[in-house]
Length: 230
Image (cartoon, rainbow, N blue to C red; front, side, top):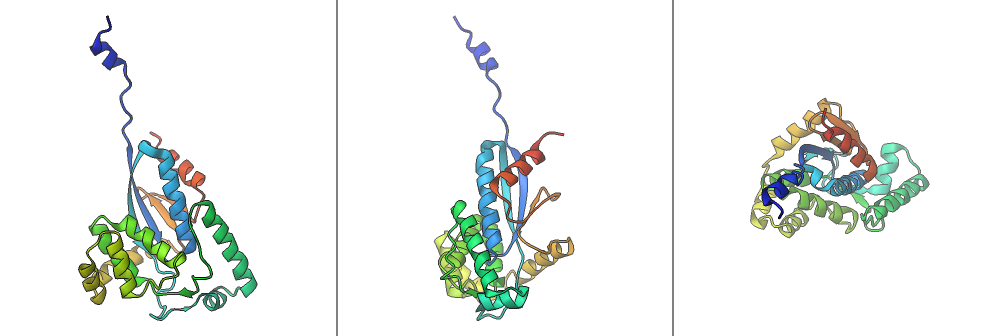
């Protein structure tokens, strides 16, 4: 007859997930940030119980001086990067196709303006305090790139906050005030001063930098190397 104690002892101990801290520096109007986040999430899903990821979204404004009314996206890109309209169209198609491969829908026909994103970052700062920052980030990206919403509009931001379970009245109060402005600016300056000049920038455990919208396989490989015991 089998000894239950010996049987229990023979079973391998469950693998304890390795805790990792992830600072994802990005802007909600950055298409490569949407692609990078989708890739990162797929990589984490592949790792499964091997890691326990603690994700923080850090603010970065691609266009900190953008006026409230925004600017036509094609005109903005032509002026900012010196690109032709044809080059912009080719780049947009590459982004659309790359996003589609990751389940991210870019509707370029709706995404026609670039907006100021500072208030969106303030709302994300509050959402992290409420532990709702991950779903809010997702709906902000969807609102901008899929639905073509104005992510500087307070009514839009309030609606999105409510959609992910945040208090709509509190969101309205925050947006109507200057709450969290200093905190967001301080975070922006911190990453700029530490050499982050383009996004997305994924920083693991305050030490390891993964730059750009890498494919899921690249994120997974990097994360596996990081969690390997020394």
